[in-house]
Image (cartoon, rainbow, N blue to C red):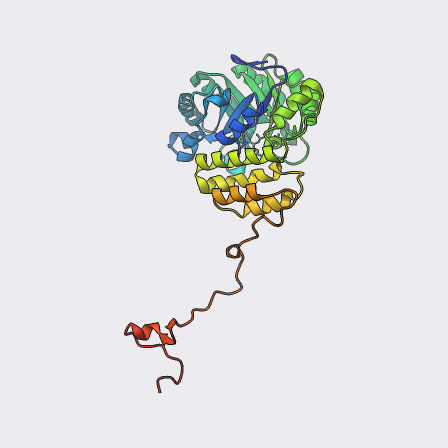
Length: 370
Ligand SMILES: Cc1cc2nc3c(=O)[nH]c(=O)nc-3n(C[C@H](O)[C@H](O)[C@H](O)COP(=O)(O)O)c2cc1C
């Protein structure tokens, strides 16, 4: 299958755009383990135009990640159009428009899934991006705003006609947020009745190799986009490829490989975001990285308590899966809530108050001045 001039093999696996997750450190790891296309976190078009540091930082991509798509969001046609020129300068392989984010503060300004209530404007934004961009434009969206307004077939046709190069659909409505099952039956319908010549990328609950194979088989999508299944689990791409090609289940990585990957991920995160933010953001990955291992909960709890990269690394590397109790640092006293503040005692040197030595009147106990 192709997106513009990008050529993919038979069962392409894409890393989903995920805020605070799909950054360069994580993308580099997913690429190493076989992801065929990586998306950045969503980036605010307003943020790019107003030089917001966070938004501009998200434009950074590295050669070894290619092909990579930068995802843009915004509900103001002119603002999005202008932001495309900024994104173009970052030289991604494609630009993706986010029409799927369900978060209130985004949808209330017609951003993300909010635009599913205003299809003429969705078309205007898409046309503006295509007109301004010098590379393929893709769209990621949801089935509709709610169950009473599932208009994805119409949306697919409209956007293909406008000239997008591929459509990714998270098979839930905005009202579903992340609840309930993704409705894969809609992916099949979009494949059959919606898009004609452009690839359809399926997304939603394709969380392990078996589910991913099932999504390909049951829906006929051209590629599968993996989100939560990759968090703390970048090797999902490698395992799925082996499963799809040979029908064999590959053993997940052992303890040593995991430790090495987590340590690398942490170091890259800290380099990318600064130590404090890097250490904090890594916390969402630990559950996945150590899932199923003996005493994983204990290690995770210990990692969650660390504030510096060095302490986190030490906690990680000193942990022995089989005999953790001896070596995992216990919770420090400083992290426990004290019952009461420590009382301030009079300062004395060999029984003489410090204040009286420095010439200040001694704060004596009752009766001593007599
Ligand atoms: C932590 C997190 C952050 C996300 N951020 C974005 C985002 O920036 N842009 C976007 O289009 N979707 C975002 N999503 C949605 C995912 O891309 C994906 O559509 C959704 O998780 C369903 O796929 P999954 O079942 O494979 O996780 C995010 C999801 C999660 C869990």
